[in-house]
Image 1 (cartoon, rainbow, N blue to C red):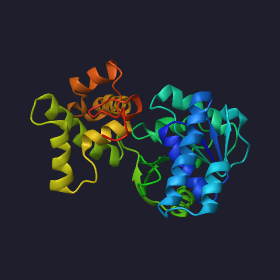
Image 2 (spheres, rainbow, N blue to C red):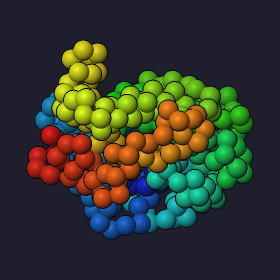
Image 3 (cartoon, rainbow, N blue to C red):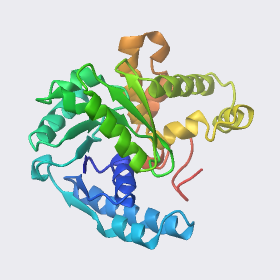
Length: 281
């Protein structure tokens, strides 16, 4: 299988497939990001072994079994599965998906968290082989994949995707292609409301998140999660959903301002929390 895009989600998806014994190729043109991808794979796998989550064989598979190429056009032909994980820009995704399709994989998937699968399917010659496979960050820890079935997605494609998810230790749910699917709508609405509360001075970021963790047993608060996802990603999704689902998804000014000044969350070192030291606030 292959993953196109070596960012946060691409690294995680490559990791879980390699750990399950797949031969994995990652498409990443940027040298610095490619080096960071390899470091993350090795360090995360070593930590997994130390915590008893991985075997030494899996460590070797992850550390040495993930190959890298610079372009989707460099992928081998006839792969079982290729997952696109580039940023949430329709034009960019359409371009990348067309390049993937030219390598004739059995299944083409997009990791989009909000864009229409049916709109993206127009880039694939046989849309029956296309669907959404929405993973969650961190991919190696969170046990679910949201499968988005487009109007043309075949039963065979969906069944294969469900099988692949089970094979990497993930539980899948299947949703139809509606704006925001299921998970993005639920997750984003809570995050945007938490941002508005912070903007209005209702409570501190720490206390807003603490309320969700302690009162509602969420494993993580919505503001910290937003930092991990990336505030630029949150903003892109909010803008998209506000055009299709209405004003309740309009991004609040605090989010617009933070992204404009480069405070993108964990990846930039600063968001609603300070990530510049140990990687966790």
